[in-house]
Length: 566
Image (cartoon, rainbow, N blue to C red; front, top):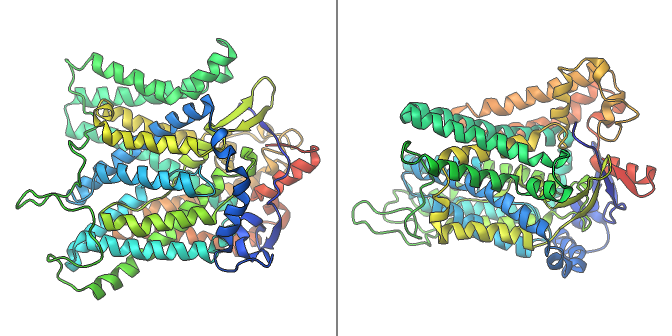
């Protein structure tokens, strides 16, 4: 059973609230809407930096810890494998216009900028799977309308960045409060299951492309990496070895598993042909002119080239429409990542910040596509996983106590610097077998939705297969399962509705050219929660099934004399 966690902290000072149809808005999201007489345009951004300014020195000193090193190496392994895999996919599907070089370069530079200048440095910025799908579809759109790919990409980036910067300046991030835990849990499970399915399908596809012995060995590395990483990750819950050793092994579970799998792959390299990561031989743009062999220049700009069959006005108009679903995705994806990575129960002491992070993300998407680089946004499940990896627990007691979260700029900076080293020293990444890459992707997805890790949808899915007598006790588990007081059939109905919404998200994955409209499907769940669920459930039932985590947190603080149970 996953241990419950006790957080020793006082209620954050930025938890002043205003009411919405679904709960309360924290002051961190209100921005200039807090009626404090401050600046109305850019008020949220200014407020972010004012509240973060007192922590300027501790943003560096708090990172001087072995926990920072272990968390950074863990997150590097988690993100670099995914980024390389997506870059390779983009290279193949965009006719070799964008590849691993562009993906790793963007990951590193955008991440370093965000870690250095955002008021919330911990959310992980990276080019995600949906972004890769957009990059591929933009290539098809460019061929269809007769426009240059990089000109179209630059214009879409211009609109995406401009819209996102407007969201930050006018404090429109506050409307994300309409997306409650009902939607947070659905979206988190959707993203995590994408990682799991992509890893499994890539392994299965090898049986159709390579000799079976190679496919079987890749499958072995895939499963061994997952099982070993999981076992090492949970070793700190055992009684073997000393507590300090168990903690070290748990902290470095993923990198230890990757290194062991690499050693195994080299031990049989003379008998089995092993597919490994293929890095670009040089640091240069991926796009090469097939006629003369010239490499494109980095900066592309907004002016159509000689290969464009339509003018700038037409490209600007088409890109404006193409940017709309991307902005909708980024609004949800980025803010959900920031919200889930800064939840009060995670024990962060420096507050919550949203507007400045949105601004940095918008600036990156405004500028970098003009250099042929992909878009970037905060990532799930990496953002909350990174916060948890930086946390020190007192495990001598049950439930556990959160002692300290090493909130700093050093940890994310180290992650992105290691990603940049992958471009400088590509031979290091080329040692990793493809089966291990798939194993890491799947492990990250599984770790994000394991029961007891904070996703109540997955906790309640298990209850679908549990006898009512085995349900959590209302007295003992009201903090981790506030819905435990309700009749079991009401809990199951709510869970089934969420699973139906999850199925709708997955259905869009198979909708062909319409699959990029899945952010609009996610948005459609908002009126479902606001107007339909209140007709199916009482207000009391919704108050515990879709509980406002901030409200629970403050209530627990008050009930426990400054200590909250999660």
